[in-house]
Amino acid sequence: MLSDPSRTHVIAPNLKRRLSGVTTSIIQLIPVQNRIGQQIAVFGPGLPDDLPRLRLRDLPRLWRAPEGRKLRIWHARRNVEMLLGIILRDILRMPVKLVFTSASQRVHTAWTRFLVARMDGVVATSHKSAAYLKVPHRVSLHGINAERFSPAADRSEVRRALSLPQDQKLAGCFGRIRHQKGTDIFVDAMIRLLPSRPDWSAIVAGRATASHTGYLSGLKARVAAAGLSDRILFVGEHTNINDWYRALDLFVAPQRWEGFGLTPLEAQASGVPVVATDAGAFEEIIAQDADETGMVVGKDDLEALSAAAAAFMDDAARLSAAATRARPYVLANFTIESEAERLSAAYEDVWRKFDA
Image (cartoon, rainbow, N blue to C red):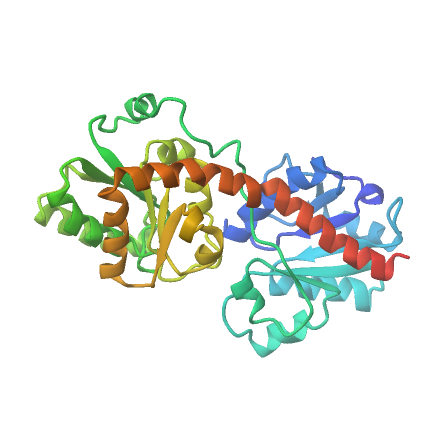
């Protein structure tokens, strides 16, 4: 869908063809941002055709200010996109100002710091990410589509449709199958826990890319050696992952490293409690203490992860209470609509400074 540059107030570049978390975030956000009136278009490859977009041939039209504004915002999420924005603003002298979203949870390189220092507005996706920024910024945690990720009206019917056991409670771990994602920690925890809990089984959903097929084969071999191949199920990658969340009683996010990590939000929105490591933004998106929707433990700590999972598996009242609290917690704090509103506020900050 082509966008009229004269009516485009915000441009979201995506200068990477391969699908990534950043690309997914753009795909999910743009329709919501437009729905609340942000007049935003994408620029670049690797995005669905139904998103409003600008073409390379449209860039010369950016020398003219858009209708209703004195300048546009170029919302970058990668170094190359910051660099192109700087060229448009500082070399080609187009009426654009630059906003950057930072998800990094490590010390930035000198090159990244150089680029970030030249932004007109900066947004961090978590307080962890914000801690590495040396410039003024806003924090805006990601949100999710709470209509897509919602509890099952009838969990047994969902399980029947997915050919899953009806007489078992289910713990799940979803995402790419690789060492970084900690899939082995989940598998090892289930190998420890399931033999003494005959009413529980486990699901691993996701894809192992070519370089990680050996890793997946090793996990399946460990499960087989433990005699649990019928209770720790590797179900592959599915586009209807929202249905698989609805089938669960407990979700486990065992990552060793994560930029942000949406799976705990998707699970909680589906009414499923979460046990997670302190990777990504997990500590910031899982309610603990009195309003518990899950537990967070240290990274790469099999003992702690197993104990946390057992605490829910062995306490039906605690599991049920956390499940009841999970979706309202997400609706109050982490919808994609609330993320779009926070980004709108970040844009308005820039416009107030430069568009007066």
